[in-house]
Amino acid sequence: MTPRFLPLRADPGLETSAAAWFHAKWGVPEAAYLECMDAYLAGRTEYGWYLCLDGDRIVGGLGVIENDFHERKDLSPNICAVYVEESHRRRGIAGRLLGMAVEDLRGKGVSPVYLLTDHTGFYERYGWEFLCTAMGDGEIEPSRIYMHH
Image (cartoon, rainbow, N blue to C red):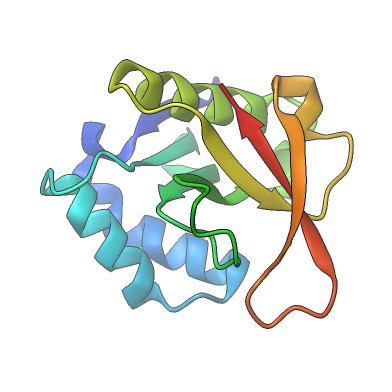
């Protein structure tokens, strides 16, 4: 089956399962995801949520939030919670989700976009540029912040 890529607004009925899926991957409370998703679905923010489905199963996703729990509050918005199921990796899913989010935001006049990560070499493949390091909330080592125009 060909994976299907969509913003959460294209299928709001996925909100509860998406919040549970992201919670299972990152440990952030489901309520926090639901709050962000509710704001997006209600049009209170254009910071969205993007999913990849294989059939009716979520196999990849990411969100856009004001700040991804780091000290650089001036670097906003942030891509967050990027995850692709291991069984679906190396198929370009993360790159396609990142591209969807960046293009969607750019179309709304929002650019640049930032993300916080410990990865080196992954995001560069998709046009992201290393900007600086920053301390994540509660972290003891700095992480990398990337930017996409």
